[in-house]
Length: 249
Image 1 (tube, rainbow, N blue to C red):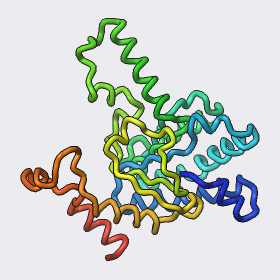
Image 2 (image 1 turned 135 degrees about the vertical axis):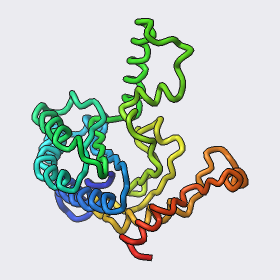
Image 3 (image 1 turned 120 degrees about the vertical axis):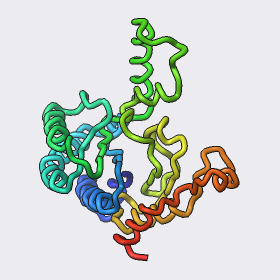
């Protein structure tokens, strides 16, 4: 979610105004994903690099995060949304940590959309922490080097209990992934929009999904192989019908 500051600057407003409007984009996007039957939505809300921003802005962002969690969790819970968080959560203010723990516990049994908040997160941090845990197990002789595989590494990441993303949406026209889910995005489709995050609403989400549906995901294979084994890339019949029922033709 990128472009909050630029959105505000273009309107002669303080940066926090862009962050506030960005919360509205989060609300609309989460609601739309729930209606579409999307199973997992991960929002890159605050990166490890964001700690380098001016102290006043970081403080405002933490207060905004806390307020959003307090204001939105009941609504999410009512709509069967399960909240999870990934990242170096221990670096967040204690009040934010406490609220996160409570909200995750409150929604843990929900079975609809899983909303994953990436907070104080970076892909390099994620991989580093996974390597440390694997090294500890090898050192303790509970894991052998020969057992280390792609599947094992993936299981040690903070997203070990969820599938890799099918689609990455990048706002503000930037052509980079900014240290986000470096391992998990290996085969994700990408959609880049020039919309700044505070201007992003469900219509842009629908556009991204329509673009995704037109693509053929081969995972290293060729089209003929997909036809032979009955695979049809992203053309999932159930999701297409549900998508059309919500958004129209």
